[in-house]
Amino acid sequence: MAAPVEVAATDYLLPRHVGPWTLDDVLSLPEDGSQRVELVDGMLLVSPLGSYRHQQLVFDIAASLRAACPDHFEATIELNVLLSSGRLVIPDFTVVKPREAGVMFPVSDVVLVGEVLSPSTRLNDEGLKRALYAKAGIPYYLMVDPAGAVVEATLLERQGTEYVEIARSRNGQLELTKPFPVTIRF
Image (cartoon, rainbow, N blue to C red):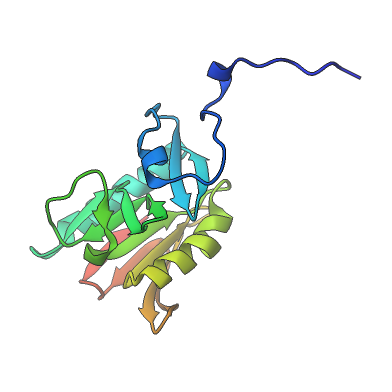
């Protein structure tokens, strides 16, 4: 049996922490550019930055959304969205009502959030984040799945307290009428 290896505190990606994490704790973390750190009810969701293909899709989708946005909307990538005092998420891309905002963007001005699924985030994106986005009242959630031979995308609309599918891509193309008309090609 091998003896345990002593690891210096500087070898950790995150500092040692006791108890639930707070928004102030998360905002005080150093930015190292290698991971995304989100906060849900005192727990951290930490994931690596996406692969080259993942980042290409995020950029291309956001560019398509931005080009089609009416004047009262704006498309962005990797925006800090404050869902509630204990919930800070960073969707891959968003459509928002433009406003002056600091480090965090209020959920009340978020129209659409989108996630490109990856092996390290798939369960959270399809389950936890979908539920959080719906509970927070975000009208639209776009999930993009690059796992198959052809990229698949599904637009969900919040109806009541849950999301319902209203559009699905076909042959690498997604045609949307809501929240505004846009064609996204993958």
